[in-house]
Image (cartoon, rainbow, N blue to C red):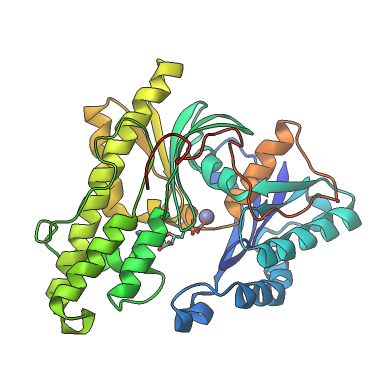
Length: 357
Ligand code: KG4
Ligand code: ZN
């Protein structure tokens, strides 16, 4: 089975060709990601209108390039998958329309993929991980703990009551004048910093459920910066220490939340032992190393896909398309792009679970 994947829900335009070869190494036939970072950088964050226009400008030639790199013709495809949401709606429309057009002309199945399912199934693309597993999904827009039972079946154990983790990285970097996107820059700055220098809060630590909150940590960063009289008064070492202290607080929170989630996962699946980390923040090597402690303390197996498949890409969308096709799912051409699309629509909200912001 060979599927074309298209991703355009945020600030990356991406196209990939993926097949279902038995060996993970042989599956990705091409994988092109065009980042719009330079276009959004002057604004310190993503501007939806700029994103949508840029997707429109680039999507066609990226698809052609992906086919060419893979040496695959449109007629050889078994399906065309595009991110159908959640995300910035202008961009999602661009990808979905392109996929529908190709599917219609070629008379092939169209698959609308939930972007989060793309992240969730990446570990099966790269490592053949078997269902069920626990997923820590940490990206710019999401921060969730989910049980992945099978394709299309998720149980959300926890979510964030305010910011997503990637957002907390991005906003902290912005306050420190470090630029955009903040995650990789904060990680780099933290590498030479002392994580014990600044005392920062560990929001939600010790609570019984699996929810997250990062706004208090963000406020604490702002207060530390104000103590210096502004980021421009901080030395490179001060910035490095604050970044390292931030990452250290985040690491403590992630470990604590994952411990709770593992407990809940094992109540349903007593032999469940795999923890997968996905989404852009999973590219953070320092946090991945911290989470690896759970392998011993919780007797679990930690899987972190390669960094370039953790951040947004179309290979994960094509792969989710393959998994969905095999499970008998495809979509009609009247599918409407969805700005919001929870993986577990029945999950209680964090506030509903009695958590105070
Ligand atoms: O999954 P992704 O590419 O897009 C969304 O679906 O949101 O995630 C992007 C997020 C951004 O907030 C970015 O700062 C964060 O992932 N990120 C990182 C790292 N690389 C990307 N956060 C922490 N450390 C990193 N190395
Ligand atoms: Zn993403």
